[in-house]
Amino acid sequence: MDQRTSAEALAADVAATSPDAARAVHKPSLLTKLAYGLGMVAYAVKDHGLKYFLLIFYAQVVGLDPRFVSTALLIALIADAFSDPIVGYWSDNLRSKWGRRHPFMYAVAVPVTVAYYFLWVPPHGWGQEALFVYLLAMTVVIRTLITFYETPAAALAAEITSDYDERATLMGWRAFFGWSGGNVLTIISFTVIFPAMATATIPNGQFNPESYRIYAMMACAVMFFAIMFSALGTHGEISHFPEAPPRRQLTLGAIFGEIFETLKTRSFAALFIASLLGFIASGFGASLTFYISTYFWGFTPTEIGILTSGVFISAAIGSPLAPVISRKWGKKRGAIFIGLLAFIGSPLPIVLRLAGLMPENGDPLLFPIIFAAITIDVALIICYQVLAGSMIADLVEDAEVRTHRRSEGLFFSAATFMRKWGEGFGIVLAGFVLAAIGLGAGAQQGEVSDDTIFLLGAVYVPVVLSLFLAVMACISFYQITREGHEENLRTLGSRSSGS
Image (cartoon, rainbow, N blue to C red; front, side):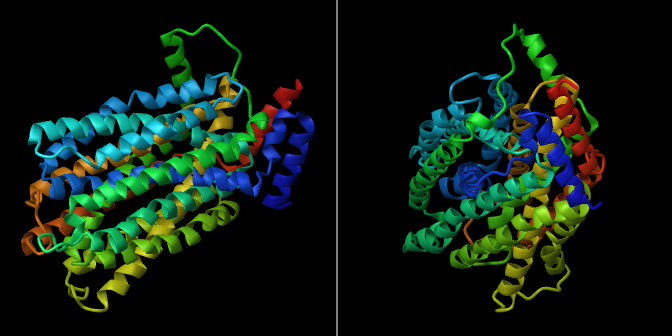
């Protein structure tokens, strides 16, 4: 009997066992998939802004020392560390007529968009210390508010379906909208806003502060729409979701005891460390992406916009590829294979340039080569991220077998924590690298020495490559297979029926 037949037989057995266990075979509607996936756009817009634009905006446009920018982000990360497990645990145990997750999603829609706007319109004429405090305050507020949305929203994946492969499909929708939706504003910025904002004194609109105010207005509108569409589009599923656990007396010690009991597995530790390292590399690379495109490759804003548009092709390839890989090889083996291809290929063009094997800047062959390389590599990274995200969802039943508690919010709060801490620390690392190689605040395109540009590539490659290889080493310790997940479903089905 092949894997598909085995899974279908298991689904029929589990569905017959109890109504609760029928979640294993629930096939979400297209609207539910769209709503769940589109919700990622809100986080992606915030994420792309903080990863791709924030450092270059505050350091090169506003004129804040990049070390101040990095320090503000680091402090914000430390403050933000407390919100993730609290929100995750809270959403697991919330009792309301709108379920456990949706009250958080509705409540945060307005405040997070307002806060995001003011991040991009800092006060004029403030000194370095005052700007540092302003940036710190805004990033703390935004990171905390987005936690109250993203953790409950992401946790819906484990509630919508328990099917091993269907989860990969669901996460694929989220990855597709996250990557493509998040990049729409980036493309618009480089192809429309920045060229339109070029002036006689600021020939490259990428360095005009007014560009970022326009970007912020558009970003806030998109974030609000994504949050509300996702919340409303999945609202009808609430009646099918697991209920909150019975009310019980909980002390602070008991709460953290439950958190530790839920998360203390080898598979979670492997995935946690791997994801953390991966997101550090992602944040580091993303923060330097526009530096590399602008200074290292010498591309114009329009070329960078076209380069970024390749993500639509990448998302269209990587998102549907993940379920195929899941069915063929399983999530762990598939993630390792795809990850190695993606992570080794990521710094390859820069390595070839440092070795003198790439066309020179301005050569008509350079742009199509970089476009093809990045598009293929991002497709593989998206596929890897879908598989890793689905692996987190499979931890939910594994923990429920041990603890008798559903903890979707707690696991996905860990995922949110990993993403924010990893990417945030990567941004911090990038800021200090820029200061160390001598690419200071306010430097325009064409004003950076060849030695500094060479150092940018020479530091970027070993940092990214070593982090990504460490990711693969860690993820090899993840233990949940298709067969293990199916056994967990059988156990829960039997327990629910009282047999």
